[in-house]
Image 1 (cartoon, rainbow, N blue to C red):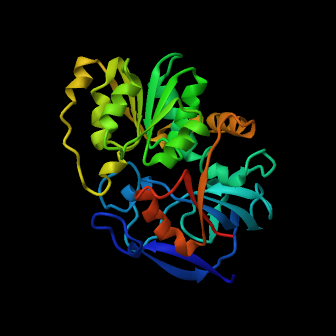
Image 2: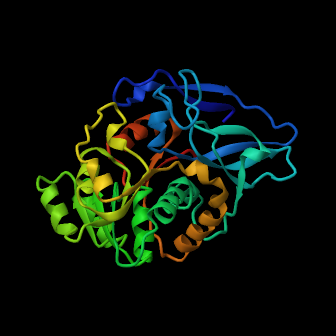
Length: 332
């Protein structure tokens, strides 16, 4: 390939994200100058946070404007180097976005060990930002104790799946919530959750009552909306809620909450968090997760589409719940 393929934001979505919100261009591939590297990207990560970046609304990070390169984490291989820190053939993790090649300052890349006992794609998922998000929210906000009941929604996803397995490792009773019987079977049979409830079931509320007869001590919240409202009503006194995401409201369908008084009555701790606020913890957490994945203590699944041209439709599928586990694009 003699040119760099890039996908830009063409226009902001009005409501749900559609594939035509993006467009592909080709640009010349530059050569690295002092302290730079040229990387051929092999893997691209697709994540729920991307919806906020293209909304045009105030958020916790710089957004993407129409005509700009779409953001995203990548794993790739150095194909040319003018850096003393990297040589040709090294594998690196970076945030180089939706493109096949990236010319990067050496400070924007992290060298990866291809012999570290885990696939390199895992650095975008279970031992990357999603896995670290799970760790930070559960361990530093929920602070689970053995015997407590922990509930996590979007339980089969890249973040929720790790949350549940970490909570089981702390001796907790873990209830997952996911969309559909296949995902629920995976959460229980392969990830080891105690229970998983299908939020699409007509009797979901009744199932939730049976699942948490002694109430809920910790919630790792990824979805928001009606599910979060039901969990609020079942929190135990001094319960903790790690508010990671509210994906049910990303397209502007805002939920009207009627049970917020539970926060006061039950003296709940509810804390929103952004994982990038905890960068100092990332190296230690990443190594903890790598060790557990390599030993089989933490299991995971990836949904993979091939080719950069399929990234927009895969992102649409992510927001529609069609992915199973971590959503990736294989570029090579």
